[in-house]
Image 1 (spheres, one colour):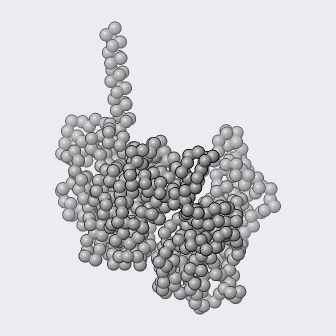
Image 2 (tube, rainbow, N blue to C red):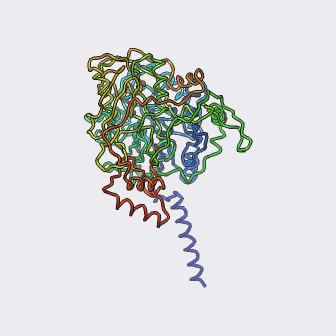
Image 3 (cartoon, rainbow, N blue to C red):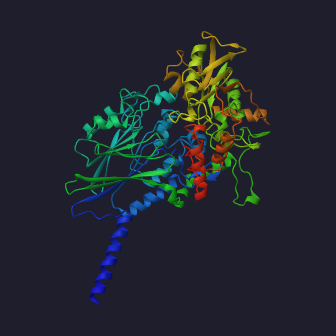
Length: 616
């Protein structure tokens, strides 16, 4: 009987230990301290977990879900720090079109972050989208330090007010150093206060901060709003997390951001973490300190928010709730959950006579990037009218961007032009325009005989692929990059290399491509006071009902997709049935026919489907 009691007792004790272990509560040995550091970034204003453009709740992201997890971790661990890596006040209709236009008023993101109990935040590049003064007014509402050690104002001080901070909790001192990609002027040059900023290499700023911190901290965490590898400065690494670690071996933990990708890695002995955007993930770093406050062990985990319910407590914050409801009304949502009793609460901007995008022939391959469409022609028409330019360009930001038939609301406009870009004009030569067009045509992979579809270079994001109006042209995909643009015509004649044209582009494209890639010598000679999105809104107000029209001024050539080959039709059928993955980043070829059929039929037999492409 005693043996049975003992077995039951020890079994119960083991079960209790396992429960505590897997819930995240791990008992440290005598004299040791267990610390949890939680890292977020690139939440882009997604407090609620809501897509305002589609007027639907999301099911796997948002700050409210993050707070549910954060609260759970705090209940299980006595020493928890919460750090953010930037890009928080921009990204939704709530932030971009309502809150950020009134920076003196309470900002919902700052209110939410204060409520969540952040210990520090690093500025991201998108915090600068409305100029320095607006950034300062909004982030000035934070109840925690906002950091940016390498972006300095005219007085040589961090533009955010601080470059680093030390947070003490449970006797543990955590130093957080914040640095931001130094290419802010590349994207937002010309906006209030941006051109006066001094943008230093991130690794050098971290080195200076570590010298200032000295022996004041037990743990040094660098929160870097940049990728692990350089985005632009490959030679010097001024925007590289990897270079930060090479220059600063004293760094204990590196948080990266900006790239919207999951990172859970080590460079040498230093853990490196990064998360996807919109509050989809959170980084968890568990640190064990010995009795002398020396680091004994560090483990890392990236936690997906798909399994966490949103915090209603956060959603009920007065400023968050009020602005959420105001945004839904603004974009044309409804004030009723009853589908039979919906009442439109948004302001109608105008109407259309039909939808603007053709149906995709192949599931997941956007026709809006394979042919001229009414969506792009509408945006380009608006830009030409607003700027008076000879030629202009724009991108389809979302693969699924479209305008429906019937009444148009703000969310519909946002779906085809989601960024707050202004319009910049400059003079270019015919040669410079062709070079710009060649750069853009690098978006496509080269076509090979037997390919059944056109595909896209995975290293060339779709939002950077521009289409043009004001000229007629062809893109020959049988040729390599740099040799594809052919038969460029301007006003019915071949465009001469020395002809001067007025070009209108977004401020983002001007800075990040035209100037960064040295595609044109001239500087901007004008910039709109309002955004392109607002121009489209004004166009609907003046021209509704708007009819979708396409002028077919460009086309893809040099390909033979074997339209009459029944094998192509069969493969496309498998793709559209989700029995084959969408060939987005490579083309399927008829030489693979037998293997593709076998793969698809195997899935059919198993009752499974191909993995969906992740859209970001």
